[in-house]
Length: 212
Image (cartoon, rainbow, N blue to C red; front, side, top):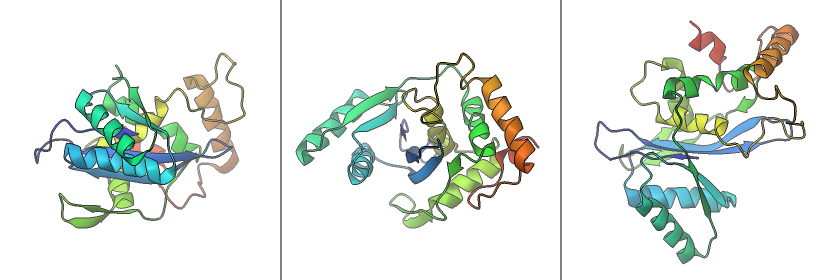
């Protein structure tokens, strides 16, 4: 997933990228992610590098701020490398960014998101190595009172990807599947089982953070 910035001004938003893996039980694994001020040349190269390294053939790119030149550059670089890639546009949502990010809460409450202990990234803009796990953690702790929420917004893209199912193997033909009521029932079951005592060591419960 890619959330591109509109400019590289110091006060502008960052470009955010995130690669997510999914297991047979529907758990999401944050495998690789970054938030940085990038030129078009750098951002298009990093997108392709991330995809090629993991053998990914599709890139989900947010439409807002995604210039036609970006797509052309990525496709040209992919051709030069002999690597086939498909760019899927993520359409602008009518839901506010804050509400989109809050939509991640059920996944965390159900323990369906896993983080690495650390993920280091070198930013040419900041001129230093940055542990992106700390950036994402601090963003969640400060949300919604945070200056740059680009990485969180990029994280929320997984909710808008209609090609990805939250629970592999489970039928999605039920009328209430993945609806608010469906999530509410799953959370109720989770609370009953362990009283919100998550065994995950990678992430605090967002319910306790966002519902203060």
